[in-house]
Image (tube, rainbow, N blue to C red; front, side, top):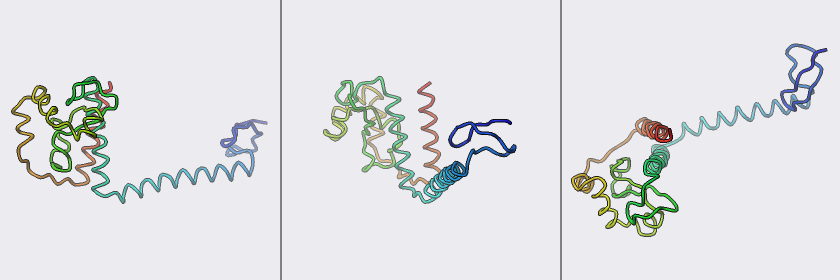
Length: 173
């Protein structure tokens, strides 16, 4: 008689037919529960994704963008205090709250230590001084000027997420 490993408990058992993959009724019940739980998990994730709002997608895009900035600038000093950051943040020169149209502008976001970004609220005087040295006065003045508001659709935000995920992959190579 042929023996096979049970798909659930991994114990060897005697095979009675070709489509016999589980050793007992108990293993069948537990395996069935496991399969149903995996199906439900996928279904729940799909439903949850369908219910996501633009705001939810923007949060994911912001996290992905910030991760890209930290990866891009990982060997740099803090843009404000010029020290090696213990905890790395992606600090925006023009804040996301005050200038949402610049939230995904790469010139507007650079590596910052947590102290400057959080406790010194960006340490903007030093940020500006070092930003001029890094990208030039004309680009800093462009950042400081008025910009057209941007209204993103969910599909545009999904594209942004994919774009920055791809850029992160390329940087890690």
